[in-house]
Image (cartoon, rainbow, N blue to C red; front, side, top):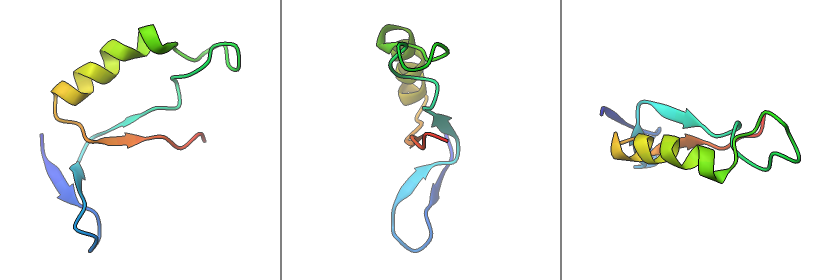
Amino acid sequence: MQYTRVGSSGLVVSRLGLGMMSYGDTSRRAWHLDEGQAEPIVRHAVEAGITFFDTADM
């Protein structure tokens, strides 16, 4: 995994990120994946070295 610094903050994150908008409460949005469905995807991302998770709901 390649990593990059965020501006001059000193924060270092993976160059690849995982968007999190598709995970959540299926009663709010039918297309969401519930925790059980999301867990293997997120686990794989972490194991691959991803440290950037986009949690914006837009």
